[in-house]
Amino acid sequence: MPLAAFMAAVCAAAAIAAAAIAGFAWHGPWHSAQAGGSATRSQSALPTTPSSYIGLYAPYSFAQVKSFTAATGIKPAVLSYYSGWPEPFRADFATTAAKDGAVPLVQMNPTGISLESIVAGKYDAYIRTFALAVRAYHNPIILSFGHEMNGYWYSWGNSHTPPAVFVAAWRHVVTLFRAVGTPNVTWLWTVNNLDKQGRVPSPSPWWPGASYVNWIGIDGYYTGSSAVFASVFGPTIVAVRALTHDPILIAETSAAPASIQPTKITNLFAGIRLYGLLGFVWFDSRNTVDWRLTSPAAIAAFRQGAETYFRLAS
Image 1 (tube, rainbow, N blue to C red):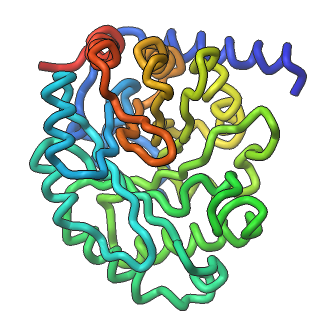
Image 2: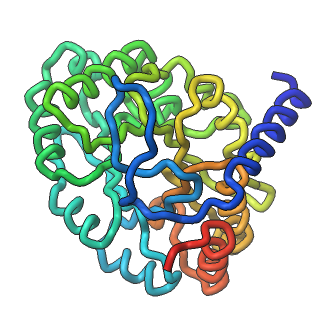
Image 3: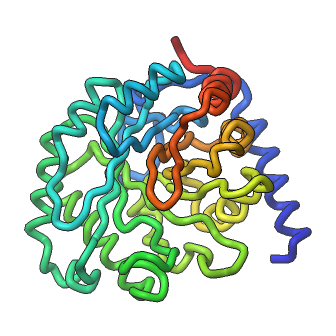
């Protein structure tokens, strides 16, 4: 798409979103779902009102979650973890999250195996066991499979596994969950944001179809002073909207270095509101880069952003 046409599309989408969400307040994760939606889709008890979710990935302990709340004044509405293969469902994590008023987000990743083996049914017993544990949990859960598949760094992703095989595996997993009976699952199809170099392409070849997805997740990070919401997420939102109008959650995000966090956090909150997205999950972790929320200025920006753009309920 030519740059001028792309920018026009982004501006139009943002304007529509801004008009649509004016006056919405934060409702938290436990209100009733809005009416409507396809009868063939997994029905969730989670609301889809824009600006409903501030989430957190805090890998070290629930003490880290409490520290985040103490610093920012925000109790996360979503708490995420990454589930390798064949790790069982962490009911203990989910139960603790629910007791604190949060919805668990599980990124179920097929680590160390081929997606062809999933399609062939080799892991059906594991998937059913996982699904039964999720059903027994009863409370709402957000579940993703094989996140960031349009990226090139995972075995199930771009240049490693054909998109058609990923689609077949996704559908197979969802079908097994539905056969077991898991009405408490919201299926989150999580893609990586497009990069300027073209190494991370449009996610359209990996799209499993509307009847297999409830929400869209987008992962993307602020990695420099020039990064803004429109450049980090705008092109990916346009690509996703060509496929579906399902609600979008920023499923992973942060900013580094720490010096840019205050400005980027403000921009993140504003972008979520402007584009009419569900919210975001802050990646509060350190690996090759320290993405954690640490400085007083960044913490203040986080608190102010929530108060200004999400209108958090007391």
